[in-house]
Image (cartoon, rainbow, N blue to C red; front, side):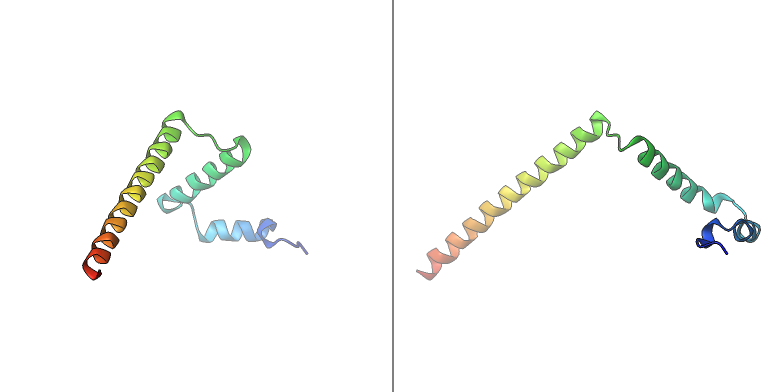
Amino acid sequence: MIDDPYRDADLVELYDLDNPGGDDHAYYRALADQIDAATRDGLVLAPETVAAIGQAEARRGRWTSIALWVIAALLAVVIWKVV
């Protein structure tokens, strides 16, 4: 008896007969190929990807700073009206 049922040749053959490959499998096969490449070669980031990540982080930091200034200004207005 095989401990891992996914390595049982008879089960694999039965599954392949019952679920033939087609267009609906293309996405998952491509995903499996990408995962295989990433585990074999490691993650590779193109310089454009690194630049885009940096720009997104800078944009997020800018909006955070703007939001904090707006909150501070609104709190000042509230305090000014209360006092």
